[in-house]
Length: 556
Ligand SMILES: [Zn+2]
Image (cartoon, rainbow, N blue to C red; front, side, top):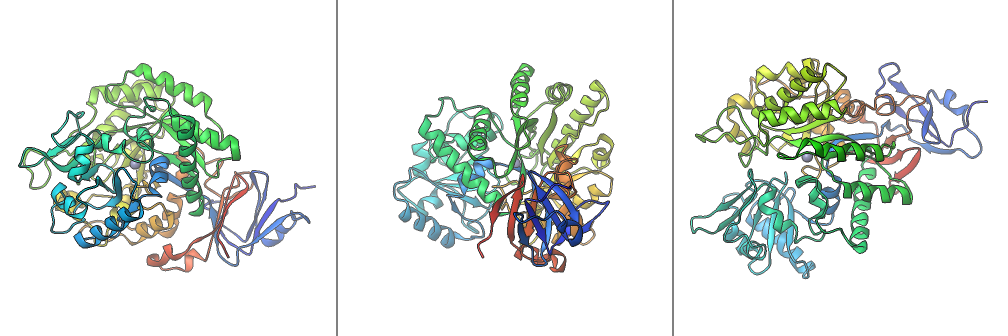
C-alpha cells in the first residue's frame, strides 16, 4: 500500500516549475517529502483519516521560494530599526527620526535604515544637515545598500571619528572643508565604530565586514538575544514563502546560532551559509572553511561556498569600472583584490571543491572575477563548479558570452533596477548613457544561454520575492534603443525557485514540485497568472511549508 499523506493541498493551481509536468491540481506530503503531485484523484488516493487538508481555493501553489542572495543577521536586526524606505526630503526624514527618538529615548545611537543616496533632495547629506534633524543625540543613516553611512556630529564624536581616523583601504571618512569629518562614511571600515554602538553591538555585521567572529566571545545573554533576533528574521522569511536562502555573509558565530535554533526547534527556513575570504588572508585559512563544511552539511543548515567582494557600489564610486565614471576624470573605483591574488584564491577554493560567489558591480570587477574563474578552470580542469557573480550591474559586452562559456551563474537582484523611474539618480549620471545600455542586463545575459538566479539582497532591498517578480516583469528600458530586459512570469518565478536550487547544486532535491523531492511549498492568496505584472505583489502568502512542516499560515 502506498504511504499515506500527512498533508494534502487540494483545489490548487500548482505551478511545479518542472518542465516534464508543469501543472497539477493537488499535492501530497509525507514526512519531509512530496509523495505525489498530480490530479485531485491521484492525490486523494493517499488521503487517510488523519491527513491534514489545506484547501488552496484556486490559488497558485509553487515550490517554496529560494532567495539566492541575502544577509540573515543584518536583515533580522533591521526588522527592529527605523526604516526610511519610500521617504524623501528633509521634512519627511526629520519627522520620522524625531518620532523614533521620542519612542526610544534610551537608544545609544539612533540608526535609520534604507536611506537612498540623495534622500534629502536639495539638502546636502552631511553632519550639519543631520544636526538640524537631531542636534544632541547620535544619529546615523544607513544607505540601503549598506556601503555608506551618514552621521551627525554627536555620532561622529561618540565614535571618535570627528577628527578623522585611520581606516582600511577601500574605506573613507569623507573630510569636510573645515578639516573635520563631513558626515559621509564610505564602506564598512569607515563606520565600523558606529555599528559597534548598535543594539547587537555590531555582531550582526561581522559576517559581512570581516567574516571573523566577535573578538570577545559573546556572553550567554548576548547569544540568547542574538538568537531571538535571528528567530524573528527566520519567521519573517517564512511569512514571505521563503523556504531556503543563500546567505552572502558568514562567520562561525552565525553558524553556531543557527545550529542552536535548529537543534531547539528546527529551522523554519533552510540556511546555506558561506565562508568569507578577504584580501590578504592566507590560503591556509581555507582549512577553517573545510572544517565548517564538514560540520554543517544537513539539508537545513549547510556551509559550502566561498564569498568575496571584488568592489563596492556605483553610488559612492567604489564600484570598479573599466573606464572612468562619467564626468569624474581619474575616478574609476578600485578592485579589492589584485588579479594574481584573486586567481590564486579561486584556484585553491575550486581545487577544494567550493563554489565561489563574488560581489562584482562594476564592469571591471565583473571581468576580474570571470578571469579568476577562468584561471581556476585552467589550473584544475573543467568541472561542474557553478561559480557565481553577484549583482553584475555594469557589464562590458566582451564579457557577455563568458558566463555561458565558463558555466558561471549570474546572480541578479531585480528590485535593484526598479526605482520609480529607472535609471535612478545619481546612478545614471555616474554610469553614463553608454554603459547604462548593458546595466542589469538580465534578459541579454539569459539569451546567451547562461543560468540566472534571482534574489533581493535583503536588507539592501525588501525581501518579498513577489516584489522581485514584479520588478523583473515590469522593468523599464534604460533608453529607447536599449535592450528590453523584462522577464516572463515563468522565468521570474524560476529565478526564485528552480534556478535558485540549481545555483546551490540542489536541483535534484528542491526548487520544483515533483514526487520524491523535499516538501518545500508555498501557497499564495490568489492566482498569480491572472494578475497583471504590476499587481503581482498584491498577492500574499497564505501558507508556507518547509521540510514538510507548516511554518507559516496567514491569519484568516
Ligand atoms: Zn549582498
